[in-house]
Amino acid sequence: MRKFNVYVNGTAYEVDVEEVGAGATVAAPVAPVAPVAPAAAPAAPKAAPAAPAAPKVQGSAGSTPVNAPMPGNILKVNVSVGQQVKSGEVLCVLEAMKMENDIPAPCDGTVASVNVQKGASVNSGDVLITLN
Image (cartoon, rainbow, N blue to C red):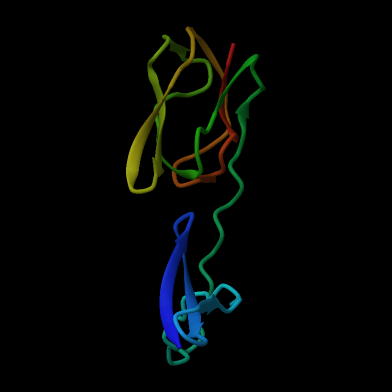
């Protein structure tokens, strides 16, 4: 019996191959094996951190939504309701995958609503800010 690692689309599978007879090999069907994590000693239960409150929507919805391009956390909100913005001006900063991403205004306009606050978690496609 020989063991091989086979990689399919970046996922590793361990495959056992049995040698049967003179020079002939047959691959035995084996289910994918998930990596095994070492067992950790049970820790004392900790109080769950308080979930952040749902962000307050400031202002009324505008005609041009600015959506989150990816999931992440809001590090900074640079605008407030009623503020005039120019196309390309940074509205807020989104931290995703250890990178700070500036979220720019898609067009000139006035901030109609701010739907996020500093520290909020957002998903891809969530409306962050709307403009008129």
